[in-house]
Length: 202
Image: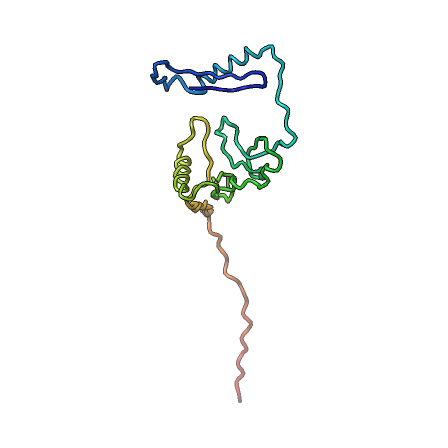
C-alpha cells in the first residue's frame, strides 16, 4: 500500500508491503493505519524546523462553500451550494466561474411523523448517474436505512425510494364519567284554577 503527499518544500511517498508478494494482514493493517501514519510521522519530523509555507493562489481560483460532509463522515453530499436545510458545508477551491450556484436539493423534509413534523433527510439525487444505475442506488438506500453501510462511524438519515408509510394517528382517550349520585329533580308543582260551580236553570 502507498501513501503519498507533499508540501511546497517536500514530496514523500511511503510503501508498505511484503517483498515476496504475500498479503498483509487485513485485521491490523489498512491504508490509514499503515503507510498513512508512517508518512505523517516522517513529515512531522522532517519539517519540524521548516517554516510553514503554501503555494500562492492564482487570481482565477476562488473558494466556494458546498454541501459536503467532512471526510471522517464519508465526504457525502451534493456538492451544491448550501440551502436552508443543509446540515453541514465545507469550503473547496474552484476555477472562477465554475463554483456551484444551484442550491442543494439533496437535503429535504423526510417522511411525516405522527405529530405532523418531519426530520431533515438526504435524498440521493445524482442526475449524472445513468438511469440504469438507479435500482442499485435505491437498494443501497434501503440497506442503509435498515442499518447497513454505517462503517461503525455514523447512521444514515435518508429518504427512502419507497412511498412514505402513513403515520398512525395518536388517539386521544375519551374521558370516562366518574360514578356518582344521580341528582333527583322534584316534579314541578302548580295550582289548578277553581272550577266554576254549575247554576241550575228554572
